[in-house]
Length: 190
Image 1 (cartoon, rainbow, N blue to C red):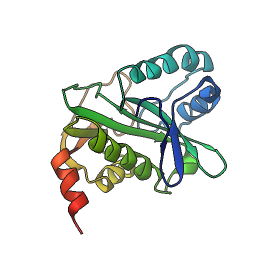
Image 2: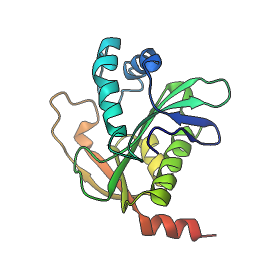
Image 3: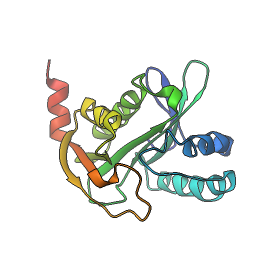
Image 4: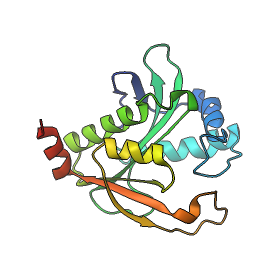
């Protein structure tokens, strides 16, 4: 994957550039988008000077890692971003985390599933990974549906400590995963 654009039926997933800073700030400061993550007062300077360098550092790890901005193929609208990286919470060899954050205008259109599925398929087809994981708040039913549509299975619920918990934190976070064998079996199924 590296710096190469990844295409889906309706999106192009590409490396983030400084031209995306304002769109990222708008995404990350939207209270509805951040409902399950907590309020964010991110500035353009922070995105430019801290977020982008951090995201780009993952590209240097090699093909298959990093964040990708999602752009609508028809019209070029900024939709949000996807990630495919080693998990921050529990890094293990052969395990990659998939994630996404989309603007409200992109919700309910199947774009999260489309983008994440493309990353999972490309990852298992081209990278030496064994498992893809994802997590979300227990009450985030929309994100849980995306994970289930990807063929991921529920693994468990954890109750991490948060200094500034958001409503629903008390229900914990759910963990999902799909193994290479599960992915391959689903592809063979009629």
